[in-house]
Image 1 (cartoon, one colour):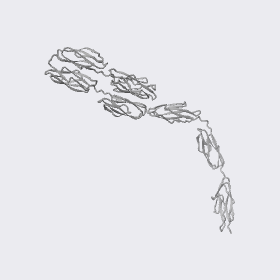
Image 2 (tube, rainbow, N blue to C red):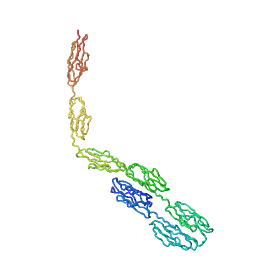
Image 3 (cartoon, one colour):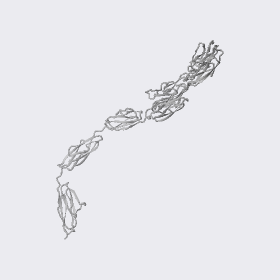
Image 4 (cartoon, helix red, strand yellow):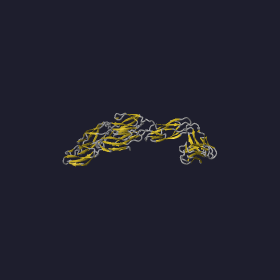
Length: 631
């Protein structure tokens, strides 16, 4: 896309030219002609960032004021010199093989007469008027009265002359004009009716400003001599004094001039009064700089406006992201302040109209940076779907392309700004593999596990013996990662507490209930392996007997032992009921054991005055100890 802005009274033209060639640069069509007074302008070039271009001018009056080359988007500034000829001229700026034609209008033709008018006496005569104008300005001459005859013209294209002849006048004074290049050349002739009358006007000429104005001309005439005033120019009006006798005055009004300077005549008392009116105030505006290229961030600019005093102008932004922050209007030269908002997207171009000029702002796109999350995936051999978040500034385009046949982009193959890419990873029937996808210029890595080998299971232990009272038991399962298994009890008295199902190696925790009957065997099916539980029968009730059940001890005391007879597995305890009887092997005073056994005890000397009796008790059995006393 290329946008062009042209100064000094020109308008702006924008042409969008899509191209299949990434580095093709479109050029704007020929804009409206630039005025003959010249000025400045700019061409905004939009191109891919990596594209390099250069610009040339094919006309000496069309000067490139900016760099002659660039890369990516940029602005070409140029200046157009004043055209001093009436002919339209054409030049071109060429970029990348394309041309933009710059057309400049010719200068307006102006015509000056020398003399500005001419008077003849009643006898008539020959006259000559010289026409001063530019080469190439064509003109014609035509008489406005039959008594004025054009006898010759020389060079009617550019400066030239007109020769004419005025016939003798046998009557009253008369006035007419020769129309040359559309302007009247006044011709007056005295009459024979009042040869004794003389007239004089003061002043004989006047220079009027471009705006509407008036003036007064004094007429001096002999007493009784009549005179009149007539205008040969439509923009000159006789306000009063169109006729008079003797001395008098004529008041004239001049209409405002909206074009080039001009000359008009009024015939007053047979004299030519010449009016030269100044050209309309021509307001030419120029901007410095004529345009600008900015980065993507917010910025402030100052544009200098140069023009003539009295030339009013306004500044108005044509883009929402450009704000006129100061100098929205002015008269004569001044400054305009612009605030440029930060760009959050692609490159853009906007304009501000200042006077009759277009100030173009070309703003770079926000730098396109990309990130993806996550940037890797480790799917199982069975395959998987995945989503990848793309983070990018608005307007920054991106694509997603798989670089492995077994990775498919199922959604989000392209986008702009933030987005999401969805991928599908196919099931893997072989060895582990690694593949990639290019997402927004980033590498997304997929590492897929190998297809699993057939699952094999072992358990340890495979058998467990449990007492009749029951107990918790555990079996370890060993297998390959990803291999599923389960544990199911085949008997009601073995319950799977934890690990009823698992994947890969693990453990099964079970509890075996109390057995109140004969020995029994059951199993738990773990990973299709049998885990056997053997539980002992409930033992018969325990019986206990002490040997001896009585013991006589001398007053000196001594060490003794007692035997506890019971079944294997039957637990027992033994305690002393007398402080002078202590258990030798059990400092705590409580003996214990399982199955048959013996306990040693000690009887302290009896220092009392009588015999004494104490006992040892175990599981409802009593050993009575009698100790004599000294006598």
